[in-house]
Image (cartoon, one colour):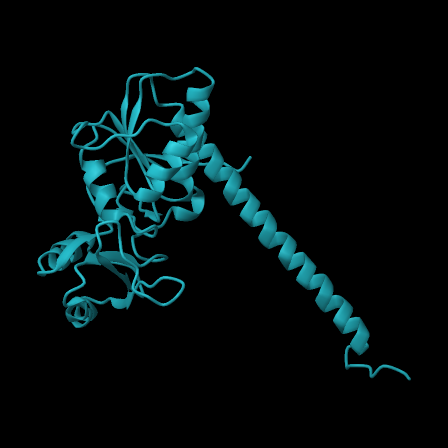
Length: 256
């Protein structure tokens, strides 16, 4: 039986074949793009880890690129390139990874002043202001960044934005009691809030036991400092993912 022919002269089987080719091509491009981003992250992590010298006290960030830094530090220690370093993790996940990689860990009680903190970011604007907290560690990350003499941020090009909020929501860490009272005031500031949840639908809890509201701004944030001040003034708000005025050194990874 002949296949029906469309107006462009293609049979149904031709269309299916072409669709399959497009699907394969799209999958290839998606994979290639993912591979390129991963190579860029690895490049940024390696360059950042190379800044660490023996005897340093470090802030160890949280997230995919920051995790690569921890792994690289472990490799440098194992190779004898580094000695007598200690890292203060910004999350329990980072602590577990550091211990697995053989990176000595400590606390801010032991090391209240850090030589260097290395972390990732969700967005970086042209002034070096950041959105952080997609990994849920914004509070500890901000405390550690504030305790470091030098802050290095490792990202791939996809994290560079013309202004904050155009791609990622702003995480707002709140105490669980009364969390819903923040939704309408945040809406009046231009943001739509979603309570972060785990895969099983339960509210996500930070290492400090808090909730996170992910607040999205449709056109980005017009005045990040005014927003930070307004949000932080609310009782029950613990911290925001706006990292303003830190003036970090930003290492942008290269894919090749």
